[in-house]
Image 1 (cartoon, rainbow, N blue to C red):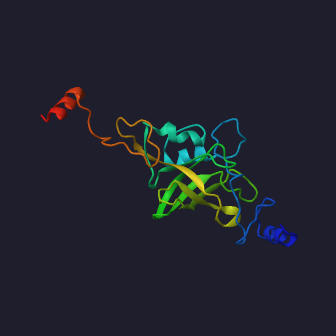
Image 2 (image 1 turned 45 degrees about the horizontal axis):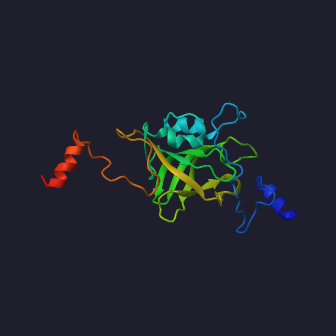
Image 3 (image 1 turned 90 degrees about the horizontal axis):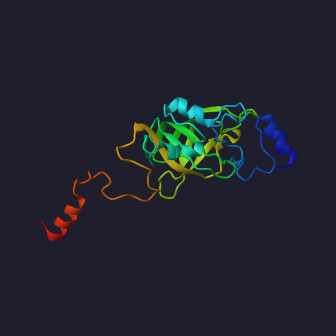
Length: 209
């Protein structure tokens, strides 16, 4: 980065790591600065986990990357954003603990607003809260499996394509739901009640009774 660019950025109050500026003004790779820990052993700044829990009412504890599996059988889950749901990010790049953010508004099929903490360093400080900032679905199939997220130091969407596990909803999980199938895999007749005599059903089907 040249000296005059550093001076210009400093004048705007932007903190930019060396070597992270690319074409189109500033296209910062934010993956190294995001943290999704929920551990009490981490430094005393606000983590994404307690904030997501507070604003969503979804009572899951532990690091962000564990939320999706912890929600199985307790909370409804899916791949579509809903207001109040928690978007669960997979660990990616420098974010080894994943991330969680609450959905605050649906803009269109590709754009939502989220509330989260400890994403953007603001005024050089971590652990900051950001409310109603954009997250955009950039997945090829519009299934919210990859997103780009607003990053305050550049005043725009960050350049990283973040992998998403899905959305955890405030409602209880349907009866009998265990671990959700991977994206793209569905179980046929998942909601069909089990017969009291499954062997008899097979025999009757074979015999055409």
